[in-house]
Structures are given as structure tokens and as C-alpha cells.
Image (cartoon, rainbow, N blue to C red; front, side):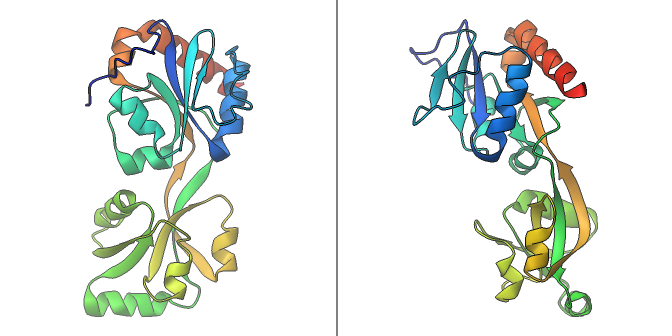
Length: 224
């Protein structure tokens, strides 16, 4: 693990909390507010990336970067999607399933293509799979003894079978609507995902009372 940052501007009396911008931000603010955290600066941060509150120093970042901040020690705790945690596989401690941001990893393929994919696998011994999540995808197919060629994409995964660069896709979805609109059908469930409260292992040891206290409050709030 990378050593914790010792920036002169940091206040060690505060817990550094990495917050994801985008789809998870609103619910992150809501659950923190529910347990009494002062979130006034988070609702409209403007261009600020570090927000100072009485007990916390909030670091706002891309969802894919939050586990990196926490694992490296730049943040003590954070909120991250399980999908990102599984893909990055960093040294963080998952403490609470926050129950929002729910989605699922699925395998999908063209609606009329299953027979041809089976035939291709029987003939070539490999399936081409497009995904933003190569680690999750490789692990899923490896567990099933299926050889895959990963096509790593960063944009719309659904297009891959339509333009002939992949046979199947592994992606996250909430409703499956985008897949259906692109004539793709779900053929397997990989795993479910939701937002998690995570902690840096060192912070958990050195500031355990603060971190576990917050985790307990969050767990109680989401169980109501």
C-alpha cells in the first residue's frame, strides 16, 4: 500500500472522506445528512474538489478514483460502488452496504446470436467479450472454464456486437433498457452492485473509534 499523504494543508483532527460525484453524489449526501454529518458544502461545491466541514475534509472525485484515494491513504474513508471495488481490487475495507446505486453486472449478446456464439466457441475455443471491467469479466468466465478474448472499451459497450468487434458484452445495468434498445438480451447474471462505505486499513487501526462509529451510524440509518 502507498504510504498515507502528509500534506501540510491537511488537518489530522478531521476524517478525510472521499465522495463520488455523479450518480452517487445525491444519495451519498442524503445518507450522511441522515446520520448528522454537516454536508452543507457538498450540495453545491461548484469547482471545489476539497470541502472543509467541522469534522470532515471531503474530497470529491470520479467514482472510479474513490477506492484509489482510500487505498493510498489520501482519504481515510469513502463511498464507492461495489462494481468499481471489484474491478480495482485494492486494499480497502468494505464496512457497510449503503443500499443505493443498485445495479448488476450481466452478460448480454445479440438477440439472435446464441447458436452462432456456441458454434464459434466450439470451433475456435474462445469468445470475444467487450467490457469496461476486464478483471471482473475474466474472473467470471475463468470460474466457468470459458476462454475469452477481452475487448476493453471505455464508451458504450452495447455497440461492440453491433459493429462486429465482440460476441458478448459484460456491463452494468439497472433495468436492461439500453441493452434491449440495442437488440441485446441478458444471458447471465455476474453479480449485484451497490454503494459501499469503505475505509483505509491504516485509518481503521489508528482512528478506529471514529471510523467504526461512523460505520455503525450508517449501518443503522440504512437498516431503517
